[in-house]
Length: 181
Image (cartoon, rainbow, N blue to C red; front, side, top):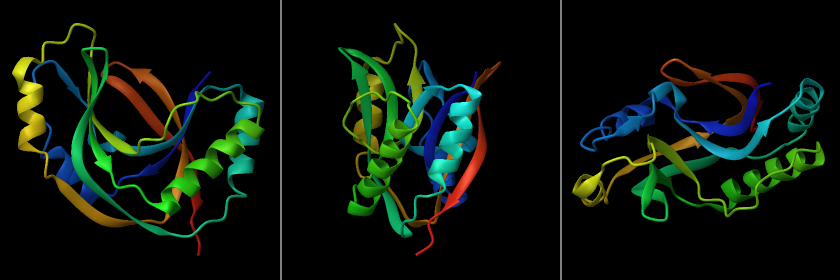
């Protein structure tokens, strides 16, 4: 059973800027550039019939294209343990609208979603439990605090499946949905 999520893809020129950031933190498991994205909604493991319903219902979302940009870096942690290193996406009303609409459609398909605040980002690296980051993480944050990339135009979003592979997760675009006006 695939794990599903809905996301905005990151264009190649932005991915190139993100790749340039990926060094200097020991024990970081750097995300492959083909897996860079901005998650709108994580659906988790979904049965086939529900997946087909979700694919169909997402196609009813009609929204405008909009500009996106990255501004700075941040880390997510659980207590004192770092979990992820991310590039922060600038907030916008259109991005918030799309995220809320995708989440509503997903819930209407009977998929239970975690209730957490939307913090748009692109994951650069993940950390295992007990990862030794020491002063390297703080140094990375300070060195890249003024990082900026973009803007680019978000002209579509997509439904992705995620399967665990030998060298990490493999994401497959299952369906794409244009933003048309």
